[in-house]
Image (cartoon, rainbow, N blue to C red; front, side, top):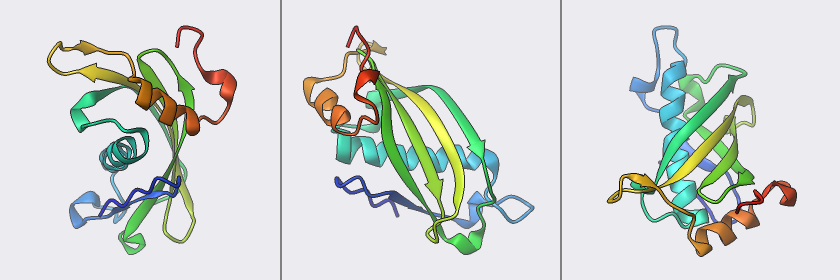
Length: 145
């Protein structure tokens, strides 16, 4: 279950049996799906992005730091905004087990998307303001923002 909060609390995503590989830990590619579930909820509930098809992932970089095991039952994903562009947001995403073990770190470039026009779009004023509230370093707002 995904449970985001506006306070900046981590988004919890439950693990499923299908998430595991033959070694008994979460398959590395599946972590991308778990991150996407958490990110979509966070963008909706914290940044105000209207739907999952309102953005696309342009770049993702993941450092795997420890195993995620079925015994963990869930992961908690924390988000911060590293950079805001005119049409994009770069997030820092920290993955921990419910017990606090740091298992992965991701950097993701999200481009806002106009589904009907099939092209990138500018952040809305509301999205920009809510993203600024989560900005890790205020100087990381792009000059063209």
